[in-house]
Image (tube, rainbow, N blue to C red):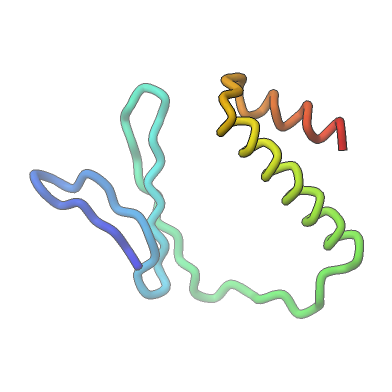
Length: 90
């Protein structure tokens, strides 16, 4: 479902409306911009994921959950640095 803040101007648009996807990104300086993507006509995958793809997905999930846990526990380092450290330890 799409979410839109309209007043006093359009502050942000995010979500999916029909076959159109709206993504609002915020820059480090505080400004934001919105990209619009069409989801119509994209080919769906025909084959099942291979065994190695499933292993990579599981590894990604373990790393992501560990990085999130570390950040929640107060680690203030950049996410990229934490991710690199955790991925090397697995």
